[in-house]
Amino acid sequence: MVNRDTAWPEGTPCWVDLAVDDIKKAITFYSAQFGWDIEEGGPEVGGYSLAKLGGRNVAGIGPKMGGEQQPTMWTTYLAVDDADGCAAKIRNAGGQVIMGPMDVMDLGRMAMATDATGGVFGIWQARLHTGAQLANVAGSQTWNEQMSHDFEAAKKFYGEVFGYEFGDMSTPDFAYATLNLDGRPAGGIGAYPPGVPAGIPGSWAVYFGVSDTDAAVARATAAGGSLVHQPTDTPYGRMAMVTDDQGAGFSLMSVREE
Image (cartoon, helix red, strand yellow):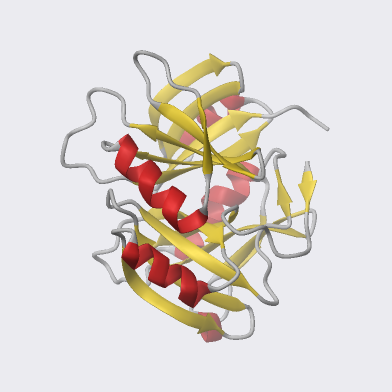
């Protein structure tokens, strides 16, 4: 379990949020899925809603800022000390800044970007909103990873922008590394497995902790979601991937009860 009330170190996945067409529908789905307490935000914040566990912020649910053409998706935000300076690094490393940097009231400063493989991610410079206040327990984010068709280009980009070192975990059939900050994994980066169409851009995956992966899959599919990858045992927990009832994909990982 991680409890935190201060800004996360630069480069750490510090926040995740969901962009959807129907916020009320998403609130119903995720409240049941993870036991989140979610109160829909008012018009002054565009309906942006904070999901909480035990009174602690764990995720956001909001409208599509890019309009209807924006995919329904979960976004990972990486903590930065200087959003404007990071935006310049993103451009210099071959990425694109697609929105911002901009102030979000007095909560923080943010930008949305794509990396050198086309993967969408956000950056967050904390002010009053420091990001997730709870992690690595059931119902909260427990892992974030970037996957793409060009593993080496992705590593080069994220190393240049965020200063990650890489803990190689590759096998002859699978290219993967941890994104390390001060010698500790902050996330992962890997190559898409065979069968992913060549035209699919890079992407960030969000893993939420659950106490029972199979039960969480059953709950998601019964509520209108779909199964993408069957539950599988790994050295890091039992994992699966599903979508919600509006098509946003997310992964599940079993975590030990505290």
